[in-house]
Structures are given as C-alpha cells and as structure tokens.
Amino acid sequence: MVKVEKFIPKAIDRIKEQAKGKTIIALSGGVDSSVCAVLAYRAIGDDLIPIYIDTGLMRKGETKRIKEIFEDMNLQTIDAKDRFLNALVGIKDPEEKRKVVGETFIRVFEEEAREINAEYLIQGTIYPDRIESDGGIKSHHNVGGLPEHIDFKGIIEPIDDLYKDEVREVAWALDLPEEICERMPFPGPGLSVRIIGEVTEEKVDVVREANAIVEEELLEQFKPWQTFAAVIGKGTGVKGDVRVHGWIIAVRAVGSRDGMTAEALELPWETLRKIESRISGEIASVARVLYDLSPKPPATIEFE
Ligand code: XMP
Image (tube, rainbow, N blue to C red; front, side, top):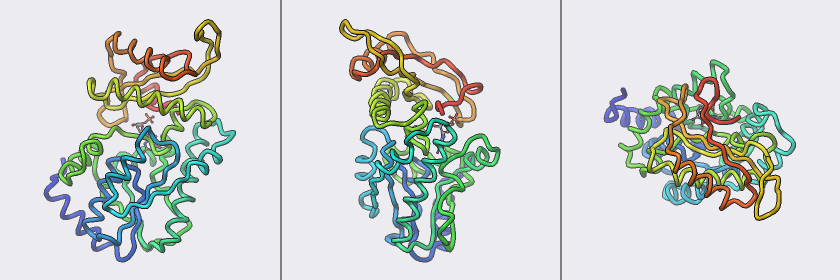
C-alpha cells in the first residue's frame, strides 16, 4: 500500500521537474484525473489548464457539479455533445463505438491543446488500466490514446503505479470532496457503453434518467462497488390500456475489488420492486426492467 504522506510531496516534485510551461489535463471528474489535477495544480499552479469535455454521455447533473468543484482551478469546459452524437450515428458494434468516442475525444482535446499551445500533457492512467490495455481486454479510451498528432514535449502520468484504492486514499488526503473520493468508476466512453446498439439522443436521455434512479436507490444504502442502468433493447408492454413497444432497462449492481472480477449483489426484493416501479413510472417510454444476475466472468460489468 502506498504511503500517502510520502507519495504526495514526491508526486508534486516530480510534476514540477517534468512540466515546464503550459500543461493540460483532461479532467473527467473521476477520482484518477481529479487527483492528478490537484497534484499538478499544487505543483505548477496556473500553468495547469484542466479541460473538461462534455461529451453529452455524462450522468445527470455531473457536468454542473464538476464545474462547481473545479472552478477555482481555472477549468475550461467544452460543450461537444453534438459532435459526439453525430460521430456515433449508425454505429452498433461495441468496439467501434468505444473507438469512435475515444477518437472524438482525442480530436476535441487536440484542438484545444493546439489553441492553448500546451507543451505537456498529464494523464490519470493507473496501474490496472495499463494491464488491461496491454492484455487487449478492451480498448480503454483513457489509455495510450491521447493526442498523437500533437508534439507534446512530454506526457506525465503521476499515478501510474497506483491501484484504485490507493488513488482514493490520496484523494482523501488532498481534501477532495467525498463524492469524488468515493466516486464509482465511470467508463471513459460514458453512457454510450450502457446502450446496446446505436446511440441516439433518446436512448441517452432514457439511460441517464434510469441511472440516476438506480444510484438514488442503491448507492447510499448498499454501497455497491458499481451500480447503474443500461438500455438493452425494446419489448412490448402495456401502459394505460394500450400496448406499447417500450425500452427494456437492465439494472446492474456489483461487488468487486478492482473491477477485474465482480459478482451481482443480492438485493432485497422490495428494493428491486421499488427500482422497477420508479423506472417504469418515471420514464414514460420504459416497458420493462430487469436485474442482471451475471458475475464477471463471464459477463463484463458494463454492457458493451
Ligand atoms: P468491464 O465492463 O470491462 O469494466 O467489466 C471494468 C471496469 O472498468 C470500467 N470501464 C472503463 N473505464 N474507460 C474507463 O476509464 C473505459 O473505456 C472503460 N470501460 C469500462 C467499468 O465501468 C468497470 O468499472
């Protein structure tokens, strides 16, 4: 386990040595990039330019909260919702979807980096990201992918030796708010991997609302390692007295240590019923709600 009191000053010193001049970081609001941003801000102050790209694939209220939390650090926010949605039109294959989101992210970020004339790039890569990407398990959009077409003088990865629980410890020690320190993992491609098949604005809206309900019902009470909702297709239902073809929502709640393996939580029946009744009651276009029992393996945690 990393010794936090030793790690922090060392990491700050290393950033000071490595970054000379304008340095950017893509801040997602996740614990990894947030820890890197705070370390870097302590190291180089206003030479750090944190950039938050609103992909339109974020959870409910997330963009607003991130702006509030990091406003003192000179956060630049870029609204790229339309760009992402347009890039995703017609794409059904999960790996292609990940690639498109990753590439669009890189393009938007590159454009900003050029404009700012940034010389250094900070990335919040952590140790397990490196292992999973090297092993070819899936294309992680936050690893190894950031701007290839810009000549940065250097890429700095201050936490690439840490595991997730160590990053959280550092986050607490840096006085980041609890919602960041204990934030559930959220995939780089955002809500797009919680939608099976093509990503459309309608599906994103549905999955965002369903995710918010699931989090409200499960986060506090059951402290899952990760919990969310996914739109997995359409099925027939009855609303009022008409038959409708509505969305099918799958609810996922898992326990895990590091995301490499996971098991579904055994939730009380009344909790599941409440989630079902809230999702199909509050989101008019939903016809059916399922609970996913699959462990990882054979399933992954996300749906795509
Ligand atoms: P899977 O779905 O592969 O996910 O079992 C394991 C953990 O990784 C998260 N995840 C990602 N995180 N970029 C990320 O930063 C990604 O592309 C990505 N894909 C999945 C997932 O939420 C789970 O915690």
